[in-house]
Image 1: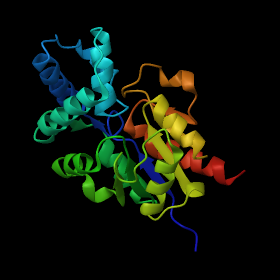
Image 2 (image 1 turned 90 degrees about the horizontal axis):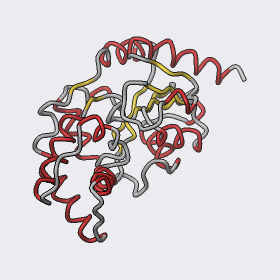
Image 3 (image 1 turned 30 degrees about the vertical axis):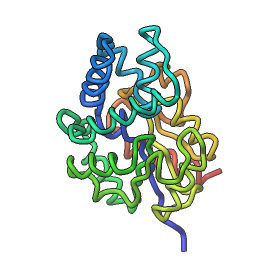
Length: 228
């Protein structure tokens, strides 16, 4: 029996605009270190590789480095502060639910593959009423690997009951594109997320500017894959 097609989404900057709550928490951590906040638009571009990388890059903008142990402590403090505030101002990007409903009507499965911790991802999607859409919600701690390791995407697909040859990745960053390409999964890029490199330069299989464009983009990509 042919498995249903599966769409695997990145979370931060793809499904959900999480920047306000992530940056608020980053500012809290920096203030405790007697450092000024990173300007919002600059901080927005720091998101995508996980909170620990976000903290490390923010410190670098201030010319600060820290030991691995100190970074681990800051990361733990970040997670503890963020966990109770992760849905204060974070919201789905416009059109997410309409796009998911349209694709579900065509028999698609959905999964999340993110470098956010699994429990935080689950909690966020629960808080926003979206968790029930996803057959699997996988974070950096789910399998012990994280993007851009393609094994994370492969295992997410498997956990959701899909197959790589019937999958599409949707993401907003170079990390998502690297992950998908290494796993030999086509990728739809969104141009409204968090990236230092404009996604058009990275040439995803399709590039969309809103979720209204996603169903057509996914169906086109899957049709192209299967006609090879």
